[in-house]
Amino acid sequence: MAAAVKALNARIRANPVSDYLCSTHFWGPASNFGIPIAAVMDCTQKDPDIISGPMTVALSCYSGIFMRYAMAVTPKNYLLFGCHVVNFSAQMTQGYRFTNYWYFGGRETLEREGKKGVSGFVEGVEKKAEEVGKEVRESVTRK
Picture (cartoon, rainbow, N blue to C red):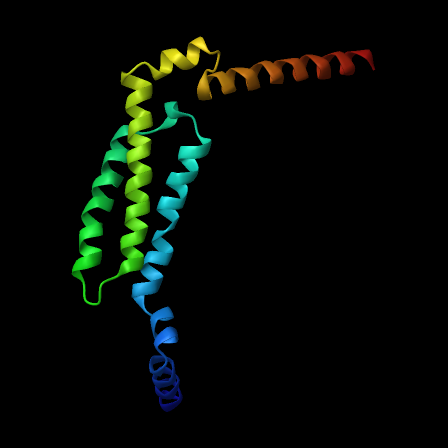
């Protein structure tokens, strides 16, 4: 059995593409790409009132530091570098949205336009739930 595993490993390592696909230089960044994908989705779909300032700073520092280390390892890990570039860019966008909303008048601008963010959404859901509750009570009392 050990000989079969050794032969399979030698066959995988002989091909440069399969060797790369079976390495941590591929799977580390591939699994790490969940963070920047989530950050980009948050930039495009979430309201700025739910952004965590401290978490944005922490993730920006993390990506900034590890961009450097992606280039310091041998061989250079360009996939990991790209992952951290995307994450750093998304976190900087989130940081801008956070500071604009909380410190530079973004919240007031949204309120003037009638958009209330997450709190407005929750209030809307509560009103809808009350209306549905009244309808259910009325239909039950009729029967």
